Every structure is written in structure tokens, then in C-alpha cells.
Length: 512
Ligand code: XMP
Image (tube, rainbow, N blue to C red; front, side, top):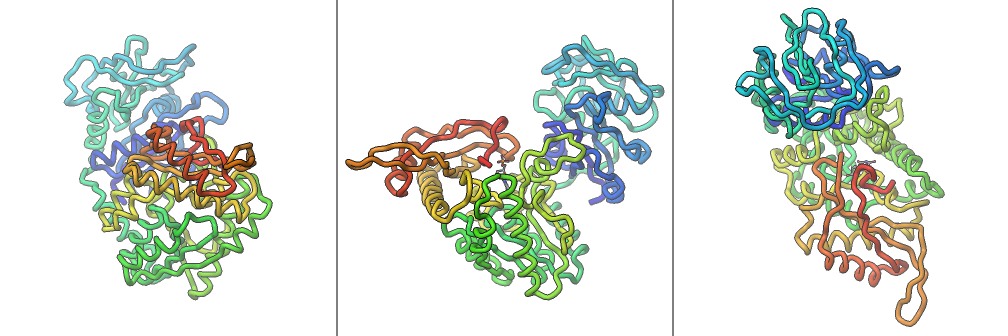
């Protein structure tokens, strides 16, 4: 998509906000982790580059550096925080490390008629800072465009070239005028606003058509929002060249394969969907595997093998489409280490390197709420759009320890109760995800007149906007009570129910 904003991510937790803010202003933005080759993304002709903040110190060994193509591209550049420091160092400025850094609000005084601040007719703006290093001396041909009380060079710009830098974060809500600064930057860069979800759908359909041409595409349906929306998008682009395969890996929730495939068949009668029951194969390969990363790898590998078999039945298949989202990418890829590898989401990290298909991931720069908006744009039934996210490795990562068939049956029942009760309480949409986790821990109970020695189930319910951060849901205590009494009464073998009150970070949403 030419004329978009390309954000180079140096690992700041706020990078995603730059993308969202840009899109909300009508400018399409993509994020590229620092350290990955720039030639390809530049060939897609972005209209402006934004360099994000990052946790490293520019002077540290192994800190992500500034790719020389960034400044030589001649594209307008906005450097934010770490991005500003990178530009300053690359062009001959001087940096220093502060003893204590500066975090939180600061009063910023815009100094020169810098186009970024136009329309902000204030002498003082409240901005949000988060940095340990500072620019002491701006590079030759740059001028200081703003200061704070303690920071003489809190913003700088090149005297003749479109390179602008801010030490503070315009993307955060707490920076006064931040949105105006971003909009001013995009306007000065000559970008045309007007990006909407409908334009994304239109452009994505055109891109997919061009890439796929006369080829055949296979797509794994998982029952989740992402693969459903990806399927509908691809179906719109290439119609019957798309072959969706719902792999029943034996790790699904109760009734899932049937529910999703029949809902899709009903709405899109000419969408090719095959349901393949591969549960025995998955469970056999998972036998005795208890390490979470190992489980993910085994499941990812098994998926690919099943796909290869299904693809084999279709003759020559050229593409594998996946509904990978941005949070999957960011938590699974650790390019030169700006953001740490948290988990290998099966549809990213678990894939073998030499795939026999070309990957198509049309949603990979979107967040879940944006995917739902896209789905709605494409007419995906509400019931499918508002399903809670469900991980590719399914219930396997909600059974702590080895995955046994009997445990899967227990967990399925408990999970069903959680979802049913949440829905009858009318809280399903307020919660990002709610599910049960089976612990290998046994405890003593008394049931009827006898002693029980059963397993424990943890109920996890979180609120979130994009799964990057999450908080435990403050569910009403009588609802928690119903989870507990129904699970203990209806699921033999479970005699204790706990509620998980951990947020993300430091915990993650799933237990494995
Ligand atoms: P975590 O546990 O990392 O999860 O906080 C964040 C979100 O991602 C989902 N998740 C996955 N989704 N494949 C997926 O497609 C995976 O391997 C995977 N692991 C976690 C999780 O359910 C939550 O919504």
C-alpha cells in the first residue's frame, strides 16, 4: 500500500500506539521490527518513516542501530525518543546518559516555527517523557525546536530536510497536542489521509488477487475471529481458489468444529471448507510432552504436516494463508532482541523454516479490535466476530503438564460452564477472554459423606483491548460462585476451583 506510514520498532511498548493513532487519523501504518531488512518494505513505497522509542541505550553494545537506508531514502522521518537519539548520534550529535532519567509528565516549550507544532498556539505543552539518555548537542544542520526545564534539546529538526525529532512521546494520550503533532508530520510529509477499514478491505483484496493470481490457497480455520476474518477476506479476493481446512486437533472447545464450520457454510455457501479430524495424530504426538514451548512446537509441526496432506489432496497448492495478528508477531519474533520472545505463537514461531507454501498473512499489522471492525465491514456474522480469542495450540496449553484425553474431556466441560455462565450473566463481550485451566495439583475435599482427592481448575477471565496488556476481570462474586459450584458438581474429578487474579504483565493471559 504505497503512501503509508512505516514505523520502525525499536522495542518500545508504545510502538503499537503510534500505529493505532496513525490509523485513527486516517493514515495507514505498518510496523517493522528494527534490524529486519528494509529493502522490501521501502520498495512498497511508504510516504514517511517513524522511528519508535525503545528500552535500550543508544550507546550500549548490541543496541539496535539506525539502518543507513532510513536517512538515505530521503523520506520524511519522525524520530521519537530512542529514534531521536539514534538520528542525533548517526549525524554527529552528542549524547549523554542521565543519572536518573526522566519519566512521566514534563513542561515542553516549543522554540522555533517547527511545522509539527503548528496550530498548537501555546507556549507550554504538557508532554510525556520516558528516557534515560539525552541529546546534549544536536548534529550540524539541525536546530533545537523545543526544550523542557531540564532538557535543552527536547526536540530538534533538520534545517532543510524533512527530519523531525521529539524526545517525548506524541503517541500517548497524556501528551498535550500529540495527535496534532502526528497529523502535522503526516501532512507535511504530503501523505493523504482517508484510510478507513473499508479501504483496508479494498486494498487487501486487490493485493491478495495480485499475489495469488491463478494460484490455489489453503487456509487453516481455527474457530477464532482471526482465521474466520482472514477466510472471508480471502474468499472475497479469490473465491473458489481458497480452500479452508478446519483441523480438528482434538484440542478444541466443546462443539467448536461443527459450530464454526456450519455458521460459515451458512453465510458463505460457496466457500470451500473441509473439516479434517486429526485429533488422534495430535494426541499421539503430544504424548508425554509437558514443556509449554515444546507443546507449541509439536502442535505447530503437526498442523503443517496435516496441511501438507490436505494440500496434497488438492493438487498443487501455492499459498498458505493465516490470520496472524500484530500481537502474535510482536511477541513471537525477537529481531535482534528489542522486544523479548515471550511465547512462540504456533502460527508464527512454530512454523518450520522451509515451508512448501508461500505465506499470506493479510491481517498481520492489525489488532484484534481492528480485525473485528474489518470482519464487520466484510459482513462476517456477529456471533463469529465476538467469539473470544482461542489460541492455536488450544486446550493443550491450558492443561499444565502432559496432555491426556481424559483431562481434555474434564477441561472441555469446565470451559463450557465458564462460557455458558458468563454469557447468561451478559458479560461475555465485556471480557476479552474467559476460560478454564486444569492444574495437575490434587487436593482433599469432602463430597457427600466421602473424601475426595481431585484436581483443581483455575478460572481465568481478563479484560484487554489487544492482548498486549490485560487485567483480571472483576467479575461479580455470585458469578464466581456459580462457576465453582457448577464445575465441582458437574465435572467429576474436580473438587476445587480457583480464580486467577494476575494481570499481564507480569503474567501472560494463557498459563503456558
Ligand atoms: P498470552 O498468553 O501470550 O496471550 O498473553 C495473548 C493472546 O494470544 C493468544 N495466544 C495464542 N494465539 N496461537 C494463537 O493463535 C498461540 O500459540 C497463542 N498463544 C496465546 C491468547 O489466547 C491471548 O488471546
